Image (tube, rainbow, N blue to C red; front, side, top):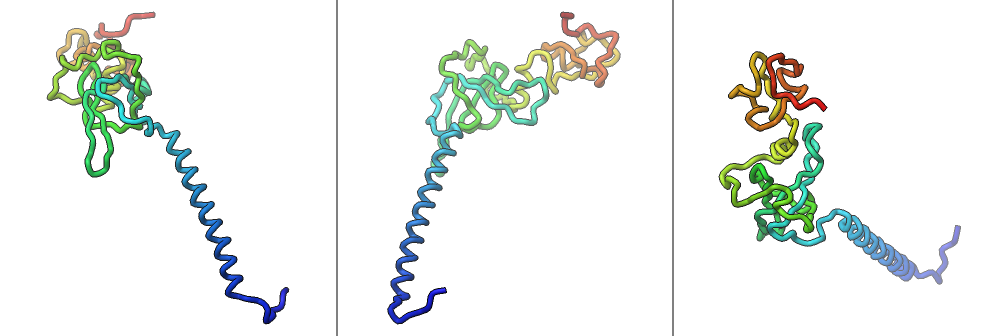
Length: 194
């Protein structure tokens, strides 16, 4: 342990230590800025805005059913820029309708090499007053299954029933149909045997 002597200048010692501390704090701030820049690079939001009429894939939410794809092809039909925050939001449509609400840049993966006709979207032919949810769009995109196509028909032929949701959507019945057991002896709306 060192002894306090008259030659020691406590004021100078405090100044020296505070300079060292300021230097360490500035190095820490610089490191945090660098780390934040590296993290934000990987988020995919720094590529800039996506132009209108660009084909992209939408990352589907995790609450989708098993048959819905992870990425849904869509067309950006409108963009909105909010004045207060400067955020850009995108309105998208699929071949089945316009998706309800807007999507953020982090949900979209642009595919500039693709065209709207390639994914079957004709914006002019869509009903502009009818909107579908993202989950519905994913289920409608899947040709053979989805929560919306599980019919409950038990005592009639699904291919002729006016109440069958599978027939209305132009889909085949699945094993989840007919009350969950898939057994309806009258149903002729089953997928072709492979």
